[in-house]
Amino acid sequence: MQLLNEPDDFERPLDLEAGPPEPPRPINWDLLSADDLEAEWLALNTWVDWLRHTYGLPASVIPPLWHRHPELVWELSALHSHWLAAYDPDQHASAPIGWHRDFADARQRLRDWTATAGTRLDKDRPTRQTIWPGESLTPTTESVTITDRDEDFVQFVLTEVQARREAEEAFPATLDTREPTSRTVP
Image (cartoon, rainbow, N blue to C red; front, side, top):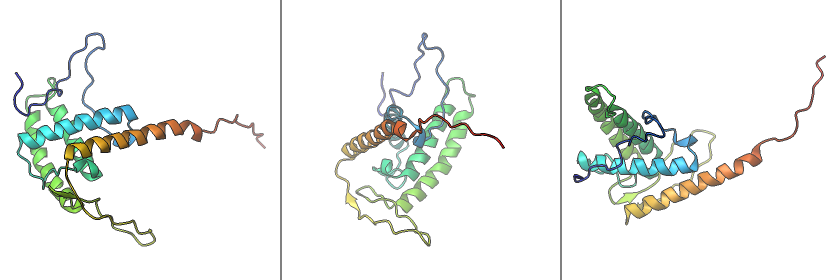
């Protein structure tokens, strides 16, 4: 029986042919392959949706377009990894209380990141950056009205995965395939 807002894919099914499931691991978003990037985006989105409903979190903690703000993505991703580890069946029974303690701290950081980003329930803009002396000005972008959060997320992920795939395909061309030259040592 599935409960309202209960995540249906958080359990790690045991595949006897593949061996025991891997333990939860932190996610480095910059190093994921295109396929892994897509899978991680979808998993994090599902979990964030479950989290905001389960704990009744307002947009001041998790705004609709959190996925467009790296500071929120990294925080939520770390919190998700921590949750996976705390609720792992092999974990100590007190691990969830540690997660809840850390979740309280994370909620304050999420509020701070959301306020800094300037994203809200109905409008979003890129996080403003402080320009240091000598750096060129980055164009400021005005707020946009959020009309369909899910549509925005899907388009965002498709664009991110395509960019990662193009970078993967272009990478071999950057390798120097010339034979090393022999050097004589004096």
